[in-house]
Image (cartoon, rainbow, N blue to C red; front, side, top):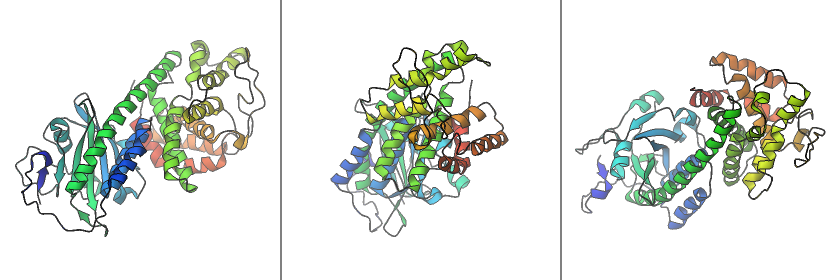
Length: 419
């Protein structure tokens, strides 16, 4: 087996390709993949889709995306059909805590530093005189066996390296592991150029969202970026499972996840209109309680124009995440632009939009467990949510949520409080 640095390989190297039946991807396939990622706003949803589309283009069993920050590559997203099954990324929330320096000692670091794509037939049999080597620790931990690998730097049109896209174990039509081809390298390099620009824009959008969350923290220390990330991640996990049970079209699923994650991160944006003494008060009188509940109305005012489907989702979440399935929540039917809005009868059942019903569970759970590092405390939170199934919460969603404990725990570890 050989290692190939593609930019420097002569055409007459005589590279020993293993004949294998693989479906070749056309220009139309590439354009379709590019179209799938071009209009995604949310960073996490974009990472998922970039990796998914790249794997579909090459028939890769697994893959990883590293994002660059401060001279390091952060292990930001992983998919592996062998370990997790097709369409699942169960340990994706455990990735961001791991990183490596951008240097020539690792495969991903070399690709980022040199700007070159690496095509490796067998990572355990790199016989060329190169500076990098394969780190087998993940294989040893997971019992997975990495063989063929394609690493492509994610470089924007301005020449900025934002990360590395790494694809693992190309499969032929009989599910045998085979080397990636020169065509794979060409297709993914073209795809990576678009992906890099999309990532740069998405990272900027995420930073703007986090700045909005930071303004909330000035009012209420509990409303920090960790809380926002956790609530959004819980919500997306819950929606994804709910959608999977209904056979929702994958394209629609990706769009809705994109909208939901950002909306969930900003679910309490309306608290910017509430006095800090009210938000942090432990015992509120009638007027203070009204002011506190008004954050749902203020939040709705931010998104009322409905200039995009995302605005509608954000509006639904902001105004509806304190509604109760049995109709006992707030603000109910209300004129959000009244000088002094009067809360009406609470919305009940499916009158409450799905996104709001999902975030209601996610937000309540995080409020209960956020400041308790002992995972055993989670069981009390699960018990409370189960007890309020059918009264506060949609019982179908509760049942799904309670079946996702491993993912929920992983999310907590990935977005734990650091301050």
